[in-house]
Image (cartoon, rainbow, N blue to C red; front, side, top):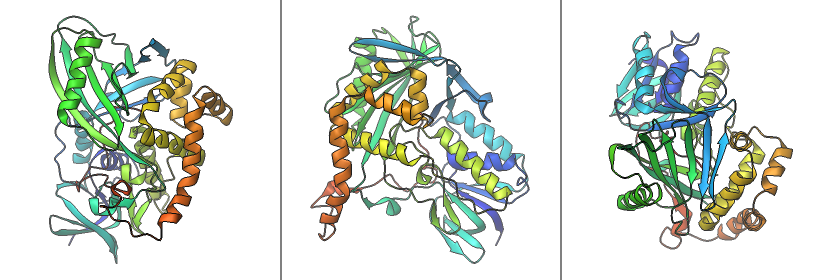
Length: 422
């Protein structure tokens, strides 16, 4: 039986990012196995992020925008990003780049197989995939398995950011290539937060995405009807061709994600807490997480990446999740106030958790007070409700809202489409 130094359980964004940074480090001579159920040869997702720094993947950025705008019934509020750029990477380009690097690095292997188990072994940890066992000193897991994600959600919050996007080409020039639309609320809310997201690639090409925050996904036709109405009635695009499609669902939750499954199995990606609960952004957090693990391994330290969110930002996330989960219709006025009363760069810094307490106080002062007071009361009372319920035997039939699943058993499912925000 072959012994590996590291096994990457899941070959999505998190697993492949970690593999890439390992190939660029002093650990490139290690024996590394990446296991995923899919070949990762198609453009199955898109990642977007903003930064003023160079990244390891700038060579595959297909488009970047120096300006983002917010739109509601009151009109458009454009915002210059100044020294920042909003960047897009397509999944297929990311897979090709990383796999080319892996193929040229002796000792690194990719195996297409379905992972069913991970655990501790005498040599460190093991993975069972397609009935075969693989051992390593460390296993880095990004796989969501449904048996591990069933949980009583209280006192935490859980809903989904789910979406369908169309890549379209119009006959007439319509879009401004240098400006993306971060949120366009000119679509019915139906008691939940819903908006459109538009990223132009040229005057005639764009990704147009319908995004919803709610506990359950919609029927595919609901997304398509919303997109059709937005394109014909709101944007008046005329004739257009759909050249590609994407869809997905990202967990929006303040449920704690343990950093390890066991002493030698380290969680990364979504299951490692890399997704920002209230935005769905993860790409930059995943890169930070992967670089930190590599640095720890190089220093012969225990590879445990630090939490991606600070304590006060986790509290902010809980407040907004409480509002979005219990009073989804409050989402639009909150986001309208946020984007109309604050500078775009300050908002992005806040979402990146880079603001000071003074800046955060100014941001919250610009928002409607009542929803956050109600949310604060609910957040503080939830632990007490939990204690009251602790003596009761709750079943899924009696209280279905307390039991959730993050997703099906699927290698690589730890990373989801990064094409939507907020």
